[in-house]
Length: 302
Image (tube, rainbow, N blue to C red; front, side, top):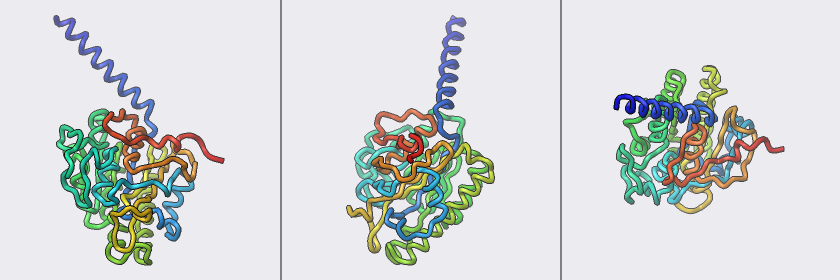
């Protein structure tokens, strides 16, 4: 009996070791940083002075025709981004959803629709992960009990500084940084205004701080950065069906990413979660509907 139990334990340990080795072999990066800029419409790239973001675009891959899910509002799309699924499955359907208005198709052990953080916890349990965010609504959309950093900054600057310190010290598998601008300027002054572009340029400065910190820490060879948004806007609002509201940027940058420039792939915000899962060598659950953006690994375009 004892010998049988020992043999069974040996097999389990062996299988776990094989799984870990397979994940290490399939991982494209040890670290992923997801930067979300609230209200950053793809239309803004025609006018904005954003040298750091444009560096990511020129040295990586991007789309300015990625799309938000409908309605083009915040909680709906931030949930979709990290939950790998649309609102019809995760159930968050409104701008400031704190709980699903539509019952989630699947509820994980932590009480919400499983996000990328639950996948990391299950499949890479030794890895660190964290979320630093300026808009408090983000705090309802991820499994707080699973992360090593849960920080709600008062300003985007504070949010960035905390995320950078966490990344450099803890070397996490995933760091999600949420910036509240330029959404604030869009609501307060209006989209496509000088004040809106000033806010966009401030986000670019913060993105530059993140990039510099990764490089100074000697971690860029093992890190991939994704920059995206939840929606754009028109006049002082969003939530509608116009391209100004629905089209968002999707930019990916890092050593494992081909310098393809503009991508031809159709990208929806829930593909971000799937792409992160692929980068970290994770198995995606069947109930997620997103798919990795594989074009970014297919070699440089001429």
